[in-house]
Image (cartoon, rainbow, N blue to C red; front, side, top):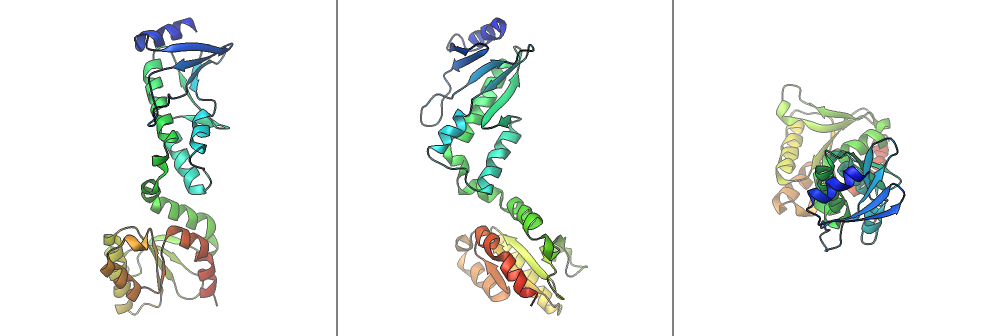
Length: 251
């Protein structure tokens, strides 16, 4: 343990305070801070077999809970993505990273940056959820709408691969084609595709789930409304009522 502690002091030019909390558990006070100026909580543990780990004993998630609750599947998905992408482990809120004397400096910088991301509410703002729009939509359909025989990336007109629908459902004798729309370009593709399906005399229903209907340009909103059979104004709207509308298609 003394060797790795000396590495830490040397790597940070003695700008570190180390306090033993319990046998084999040391708290590191480093000049690394959250956005609001609070110091990032960090502990070094000896695992009893010559290996070490850095962890926070749940203090990062506790800090986050003061201003933001992880109270939906989407938020939990974002949190787990940050943990996974940074190669960390999490158990009962304790977020950890294995380390060694040779890698202790880079590991400290790595894990504290991850703690800062998790502890900052801005990483859970709307733009993060937007980046996961299609992933969340796909996950929901795969888990919650399996009974309606969903298929992804379908070509209603086989020879027109430029008119691909994101999903199709088969609640009855005719398909429901669904488009996920998060921006104006996808709104225009959905509009054109539905118009071409109509021109080809396909028997179908055209649905759109918007990331945010109100953020689309007015003309795109109008074209979608005039062309498709059903619009969901948001992902949450789709998640709460898609099953009801698909059940109606069965009648």
